[in-house]
Image (tube, rainbow, N blue to C red; front, side, top):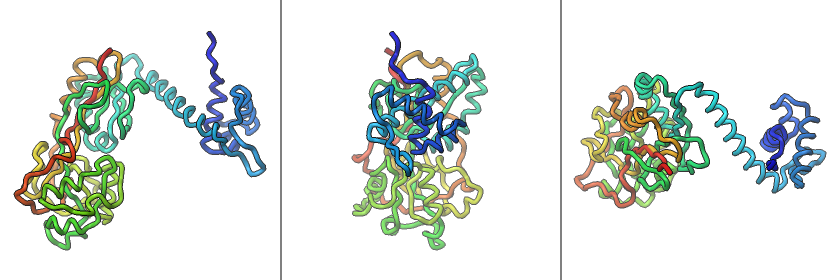
Amino acid sequence: MRRKIPSTTALVSFEAAARHESFTKAAHELSLTQGAVCRQIGGLEEFLGVELFRRSRRGVKLTEAGLSYSRRVAQQLDAVERDTLSVMGQQGANAIELAVVPTFGTQWLLPRLKDFQHKHPDVTVHLTNRTRPFLFADTDFDAAIYFGDADWSGTQSHRLMGENSMPVCSPSFLNGRDHLQASELAELPLLQQTTRPYAWRQWFNAQGMDVARDMTGPRYELFSMLAQAAMHDMGVALIPPFLIQPPGDCQRLFAARQQGLPPDDSRTESGVGVTQRISRLAGRSGPELPAAPRADLSSISGSQRKITPTDITLCRVKTTSRSPQKKDLPPNIYRVFCPILA
């Protein structure tokens, strides 16, 4: 049975025109004439029986149907391109498509992949940023590294490592001191992490404090954004130390701290860590990952790069004797999620 699908050329032309809302810009991007793009889109509208653009002397504008269709077409074209590049990149070798949260992938995972590649030269690891859980059936991913509990439907997970988040700030907030009182911290601008809305509340609760404004402040999706905001004197952020790469001018990033942070203990001599979510390795239905690479991916956290004072400096905050409160959020652990085989 013949599929009722428009030509790829028509879909590519439509996606570009919809993205730019301009036939001229689409033609320039695709190295076509404007007339060719117009004909492709006209043929697509005839095929669908639906008007996708409203034409006027001022240009073109997507109709409601055109806007909805363009979003779906863009997603499908992205999937086709990703799958095509995946096949082209394999070249007879085993390949692992791994989804990972951006800052963790850049700052923690990538520096550790060299040893993995040495052990498995026939395996290629492809990394793609994903900040939210997704349906493995709709992607080509074999596994994913995320923060969170083991409640990702259709997956099994393997614990990678625990995580402590510490308050960090620029030296300008310290006024020459080596630490801040928790009460002083409560008066500073609090930088928030989008996927961890209760982080500051949990931190202050661990100090025996209830702060009314613990959820106020600008929100950022990535830890790298939080680090940049803190570096530029925008406020105080809660960030895992190992996710901050030395930027070269680290002296102006954060106030000095000498002690390291234990990965699974939420209390340290100079501050209270924040325990929030879990990172795991998850995967999709289908052929299982090769046994050796799978084991190495799950144990890659054993390769710990020592964090020194020149790498990162933290805002030292005096603690109280009160135990951390964990009722708001589950333990913060990195896990590797893999899909359950059918």
